[in-house]
Image (tube, rainbow, N blue to C red; front, top):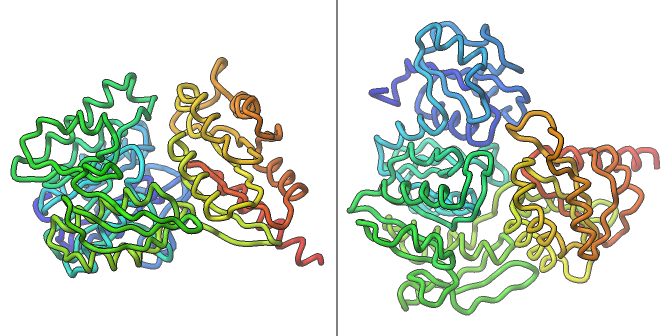
Amino acid sequence: MKNDSRPSRTSHLIGIAGAGMRSLAQVLLGRGWRLSGSDLAPGQIHFLIEAGVRVHRGHAAEHLPEGTNLVVFSDAVPADNPERRRAAELGIPSFSYFELLGHLMSRRRGIAVAGTHGKSTAAAMAADLLAGAGLDPTVVYGASPLGSPCGGRAGQGELMLVEACEYRANFLHLCPQQAVILGIEPDHFDYYRSARQLERAFAAFAARVPKEGLVLAAADCPVTRRVTSGLGCRVETFGLRPDADWSACGLQGREGRYRLSIVHRGEHLGDVRLRIPGRHNVINALAAAAVASANGVREKQVCRGLSEFRGLCRRLQTVGDWGGVVFVDDYAHHPTEVAAGLRAVREMYPGRRLWCVFQPHQASRTEVLLDELAESLQNADRVVVAEIFRAREGDYRPGEPTAAELGREVARGGVEVPQVHTAQEIVRLLETRLEPGDVVVMMGAGDIGKVRDGLVERIREDRAAG
């Protein structure tokens, strides 16, 4: 790992189709690496195949090409994966996704964007501002910008900006000179057994920033303020609190999108009109503005760049209008995100009947946050709960929560909840119940896209038959 730009570097990426791994692959290609990869569901990687990356469906020892001198694997890939085992047999160095990001960052001036919510959006905003100012950063985050297949960018500048995930304390592999913490809430219950354990992980992450560095902390989150108090480096806050170092004034919303004036320690820096919906994105914009300013981007460039930011796929993305019904796609799966997303959709389409098709993500998260999830879904008129996406959890075990159980809790709040849960059942229900003027938001971090795709296919069939 002495030189990450040597053309002779040949790497095999296990789990290459994941959002973060796709972005990493894009960066490695830009650095001159030769790549191969594998994934159980190799979707959304046509751009890699077109660039000459050979991608295998499924995992097998023989997928590891001869001459490979580095293996990278995603968090979803277990230690007994046949390709990881084969690499170990051959003595090929293997790194997790975040371990390799840490190696790459160690050669540059690192910026890491962390927090329970908003990491991808804030990172994407900041990346656009840095790139637009000609700083040519290297960028890796786990989402796709609208019109682009991934959030990876192989820049030639000294900056490297990455989305830093707290799961399994992965962000402790990074060595940033600047860090953003967008807020801390209990999550990842299959790893963190207590809120205190999670808080300690974030404290360790913040402490990795050197004394000459900078930590940008969410002013509206008391846990973040506690974690970042007493650090040896400079700390600045951002948020909607008037005493934040970076704050917004003159906030005005129209159809879910907000106008604001950015204020830094009492000084008005400029006005922004966000194209992306949601009051929560005002906070993401303030974080991005603070990152950009810390790296020398001028105020006018910051405001212009934030006003031009188009957004990310599956972040309150309006994906179509069929038969007078609007469909919105969103990644939200934590109660705070669900509540913020539904509020934004209400503002985007006021007075219209709102359906939410929600897929819980992990039984462990659903069990701990069942009441909070049920409460967060109350802002919809109709809620359909899809089967729980069991990421990293294996088969259902007796006693674990179910989609039906969450549905019953939502219904107790007075919301209509049809008792259908499979993708096929949901498609059939919506096909018969939707009316012109309805809005359907599909929420979840799993395979909820099957519902969207199934509906689109039914609509196309109906039109063809008609």
